Image (cartoon, rainbow, N blue to C red; front, side):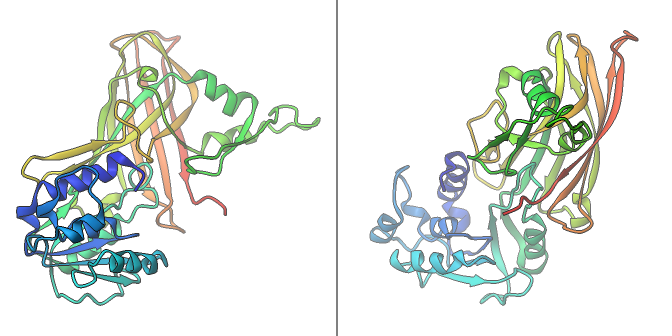
Length: 350
């Protein structure tokens, strides 16, 4: 709820399109505290950016959804029920705890599926497979999905100072993907209390970072790599290999590639989009940084081309195995480079 970009985008997609939600049955997949579910029943009265759920109740007009079903595996559903009840929405909202594949819905079909399913790098620990199951099992013909399109982008960045800190000289132990806390353990790779720890350099390179990147660090133009249409995509297609070409903006060095994603609500009367890229306002997804094993020395108008591959880990499907192949297209034999890097995005220890 603290992610203003995310929350406002969903809110606007609902409030600005009350004609789509009126008298409809809505399924909120992964409802959490039910904030999205509570947005839906009273769409016709939503005007203020700061309007509260209690204000919804006081000014409720029966022009919203017929019923909202929220499903979540977590025990947060108990608090969500309390929140729904104290806001006077128990008759309009049904909350179910359990797996989407196992719960029994009070309606055989739904008109709209609503979900905030995205993970870091879009697909890491995402709930997209669950949303697709709900689509195939419950979405009525001509039903709508909010949001319904997601696109992954890549760009090359100059980030030598931090790469040297992370890879060359020190080991940063990060509780992966924790937004707030970074614990640093200073270890000189080649001499750790008299021991050679240089093999850990390779391990560090295989772990992408989730962090904010300043737009000025981008050496290349962004390139669209992979797009998902939630109406048509099949679960097997979420394992992909896609080509990319990055056009260099200036003479500089490329130490890493970064990935981010954009989200679209195309069913809206006026399409709504938000981006998690370095050019956009902060979101909790930040950007995903993939450090390369070598530094690319690039000149303006040159290109870095290659492929990005991503697939669920064979042992834990919400973790990702990622591969990047790259080639610097240049006439200079000294600067010519190509390589292949493998990365793993996996769950962090407690």
